[in-house]
Amino acid sequence: MKHNGLKGMEDILPPDIAVWQSVESSAREIFGRYGFQEIRVPILESTDIFIRGIGEATDIVEKEMYTFMDKGNRSVSMRPEGTAPVVRSYVEKNLHTMPSPQKYFYSGPMFRYERPQKGRFRQFYQIGAEAFGIAAASMDAELIIMLKNLLEAIGLSDLNFEINSIGCAACRPAYRSALLDFFGDRRSEYCPDCQRRYETNPLRILDCKVPQCGQLRQGAPTVAGYLCEDCRTHFDEVLAILNSFRIPHTLNPNLVRGLDYYTKTTFEVTSEHLGAQKAVAAGGRYDKLVEDFGGPATPAIGFAMGMERIVTLLKERSEIKQRAPKVFVATLGKEAELEGFRIVETLRAQGVWAEQSYGSASLKSQLRRADRLSSEFALIIGENELRSGKLQWKDLKKSEQGEVAAADVVSFFQSE
Ligand code: ATP
Ligand code: MG
Image (cartoon, rainbow, N blue to C red):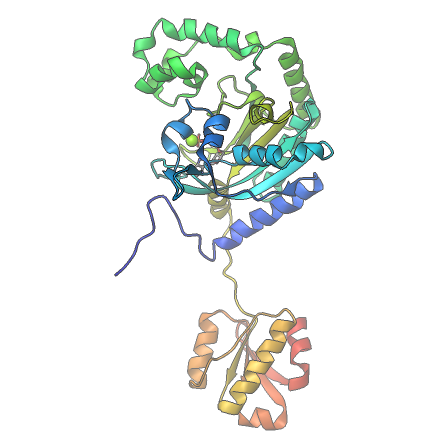
């Protein structure tokens, strides 16, 4: 019987995996220079942390979570994002007692029960970063600059950075009520989701993708006019630093983000080459979340980058090279086969990818296999070669050949 993977859950196979690994290693390297260390949190967490963190009236918690009762009758959820688990860990493991700032990054799968389509999966991967303990605008700017540096390092320098401030607990209520006044007039004309959002989370109406809602909200009050002095100064400082580093960015007053925990700065990175699902990374400040999770008041900011969309962009830009062995050792006869195996192991021990012939086959069919693997060289060992200690090599790309002493094989292929 044939089995199929679940809808929206993809296998990531070679050669694509090489692109994934190279993004992951660039992230590790660049984040390291900024002092971000890796944190690995579980995939399964208590459902409360997501309800508490992301917010009850959000798409993620309302409709997208993989939630079930475990065998101990506890409600658990597959993580739909990384921030809530990292904050849970920060508070639970008392990481706030460590010197500030504490900077972490994570990389791994997230799960959301969404309709699968281009750029949208039910299991998808994120690389994210979170910085705790600093309220200053230089932290917001550092995080954005770090993300920009990563994207440039992997070859994505034409992405758009959008930025906004959504205020804080002091100024958001006034903005919220201004929005309620504005939306209230024509409330019944908005989509059913927005009518619900009107009650639960009116800021999210600004972010609705339904064209009708986009038109209705033309002329809605923008948050800029409502920011308190602290939020205004903070936002101006962030923008001033980005300007002084010449980081191009667009102000987007509708960038409210779908999660409840954000305060002040929010940002999103988008590409024109992805169609409808164009956001490749998004983040923002969440100065109240650590406190909400029972920790001490701790300002924090983070972002998450969607790997599938990044990999799609990279694959469009350059062809992926299939990895190939350096040497295929073809042998004739039992004795040569064992000697071949020994040589292959020696090469591998010295860092060279070598393949062996696995049992007896004609030389022709062994060389055909070497060719199909795109091996660069074949090394041939038969009875004569065993006796003389001189092995025949063939360069399968250049159609050259020659001899090498058995004792020199490693240095020969290491230098080739
Ligand atoms: P979107 O507007 O695309 O639904 P989002 O606001 O739900 O994004 P975030 O929670 O901010 O996304 O996650 C950060 C990034 O993770 C997104 O910018 C995107 O690149 C990626 N991402 C989110 N959901 C998915 C998904 N279902 N499949 C693939 N990538 C995703
Ligand atoms: Mg979403």
